[in-house]
Image (cartoon, rainbow, N blue to C red):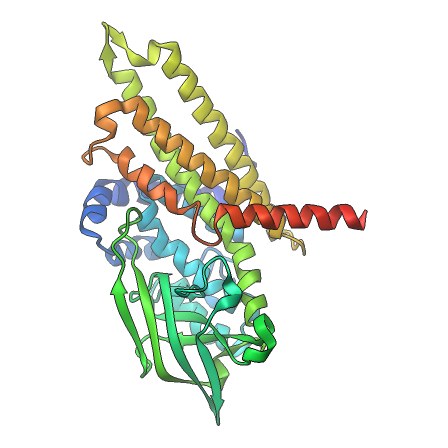
Length: 384
């Protein structure tokens, strides 16, 4: 389909696709097997000026938005969903600064992120605060010109590898979610360390790590927005990055479909390619339909957000749910089409199936997303 991308958007997509095909695809299985973080591959994105596609030009970016970020994530994920997360996870950690940072904060942090010199991460989840984000226990106590952070964050994408962290902590327990605040914490700050690196089923090239704050003192100028705005910072950020998860899922699904289609044309059984069998043809047709429908929803959601729309939670949730469910279905079918070969680690689709699963889980499980969608629908019908 023609999605009417601008010339610059098409160039971004093509550059990301070239990096995916030439630099990422050849090493994807190796990075997955070794759990190797792709810091060495970030230089290719930096050289192509892709690290800052969603950052304003005044801070060294290309001045794009959520759609430009999604285009890059989609193409990189087609080759490896885990490697793509170094870029996508940085976007998640950067959007709080883009949305709520002061001019001084933006000038200090965004240029290095746009140049690919530094990576970012977003720290909300804790052991007892996953779907219930309001259950966080990490605290930030004011002490003169500083805040003192104490607590542990869990399952943080880019954890241990990122240089800049956006951290949500509680500054007033009595106010519940209204007592949360958001802070920028730099790697190397005294009292800030890292726990174990998780051994995951999929996205193994992405670092997922505990963050530990033990009387970590950060200057008050590192507060984002103002005290009590942390929950809003987190939710507004996730509304803009969930389409990035959708784009990741879309890329994984596309990569699996391409592999399955190629295999079906080459693999012969009963004296003919298995692509000549109607059972396989119907599976391929359904996979293609689901991917194209997901792409339509993801791109249009990104455009809706970039247009400046105010209420975007429902649409962001819809894109994330539909694309991630599609990725899980398509990758499972790809393994089925490839049979025993699909189940082997030397072929890419078993990895894609493992990678796809997390897209239904992080940045809000699909069950929670359906809650959000339903509540928004009910609100809209009440207003009418």
